[in-house]
Image (cartoon, rainbow, N blue to C red; front, side):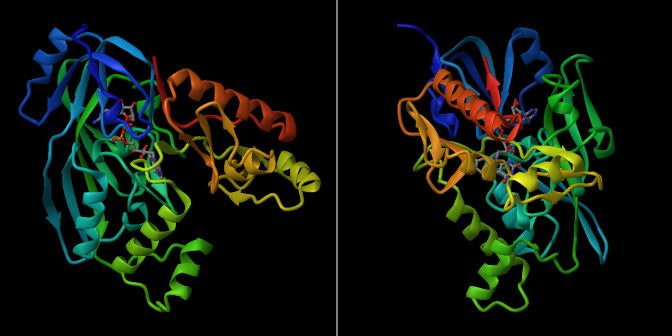
Length: 335
Ligand SMILES: Cc1cc2nc3c(=O)[nH]c(=O)nc-3n(C[C@H](O)[C@H](O)[C@H](O)COP(=O)(O)OP(=O)(O)OC[C@H]3O[C@@H](n4cnc5c(N)ncnc54)[C@H](O)[C@@H]3O)c2cc1C
């Protein structure tokens, strides 16, 4: 009998994994003392973007669970909210939509906690956390003190921030502060969302209509982790330059390309590449691509981190062989 703790149920991919200890951070705990006692710490949110290995017996988990949503400032146009990192992100979106505060409604139903959203600059259907984030509060594990970090210091880009680069494992985010609009929400331009409005005869969508549309569209394309464990999109959409994009489109006439912030660079949907490499609904042992959406890897039951890595590597190899594009995976592999 070991004294290790199984944390598989704290994650959406449901991989077996045991850790040394787990501490639930509710806001009261003294983080300086905690880090003085524990050196190999892993910060856990909602576990929706991590792939755990079987043996993490050297790791102490700090699970972020503090809760609060506080209005810090408002005028007739905007409202600023300070949100405890452990708030479930979708509860934050629901609170904002119910009160007609716009700016995050298209990010409805993204699993995980508010404090994790800056880590990979969470985004969906044209909105990203970077567009509303003002600042965040965090415990700095190197300087051993609490700090406030401004959004512009985080170097956000598509699914990326300094928390995944030079700040990796340095900060425990304890609060985020976001600024939302009291004006009309932007209607997502995505065809699937527009089709939802058309089919439901909604002409001037309210913020709640947008939230409902997004929730419906998302769950028609993504498996619910409680029914089929997964981490959402497993691969990032690769970005290619215009010369390569033109060459690809010559060979693959239907290849969709999306603009980026740089006029010479284009985003290629990774799901399209995987599907057109013949890999939609294909399994590699207990891990496979989802039958309705090739971008999502699912755990058909009994998978381990090794099975996920094997499936990931096979997909990357096959897609590279067909398109000359090297896919990169999105969830963090914890070893
Ligand atoms: C069905 C499904 C759909 C998804 N759709 C989207 C989507 O549309 N867009 C999108 O961007 N993502 C999406 N994701 C991925 C995931 O939901 C997000 O990345 C989310 O922000 C992860 O939050 P989490 O709390 O689960 O983080 P975790 O998986 O627990 O952690 C992820 C990383 O963040 C770090 N971390 C977490 N909390 C903190 C903190 N307080 N301080 C410091 N570091 C922290 C962890 O150490 C880890 O490195 C989806 C996932 C699923 C399962």
